[in-house]
Length: 227
Image: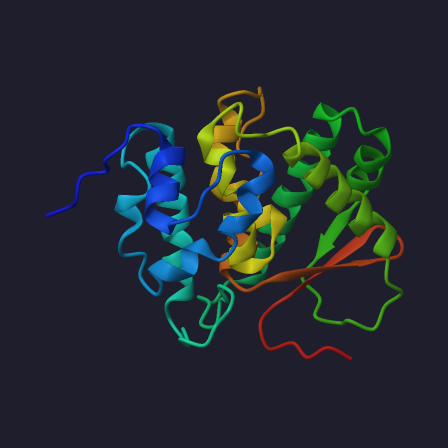
């Protein structure tokens, strides 16, 4: 039998479940590491998040992260790591990476970030595993700043789910993954579609992106050694 959720307000459930006092967004950092208590399978998430509505949609996404990282899980893990990713063919990984880039372009347009939009617009993707290339850290930094600036707009005053930002970020130290898990709540207050589905596909297959000079992105699959 699934236990009753108890208090109607999510913040009350968060405090009851964790034993922590969190009253403002400035105190939400105390929740870092919260989701480790539900590893490896996500059992107990139903005590924290409802199964219906936006909470249910966010819970489903969090559960997907558990499912993908359970194979190969080590109880000593501090973070959620994809150790046994499903194989993916070259056309699919190029499609995921291209979809991610187009999503960033759309996000930058929404943010009126002309510099990031221009940088993303010219990016092309290759499945080449060659990693001996001049790195382009500037474009990567632009994208990171654009995404984190966007996320800063979503505070608990809009939805109690945003109290979980630090907790979700700490699962993998990944703002992009955190944003994907919270997107059902984000989508309630923006005109943007789900832009980070391609990023989640990349992450779930253990794929990483490496930016090179000349506007190219190289998609690295698991097992490709760094040089």
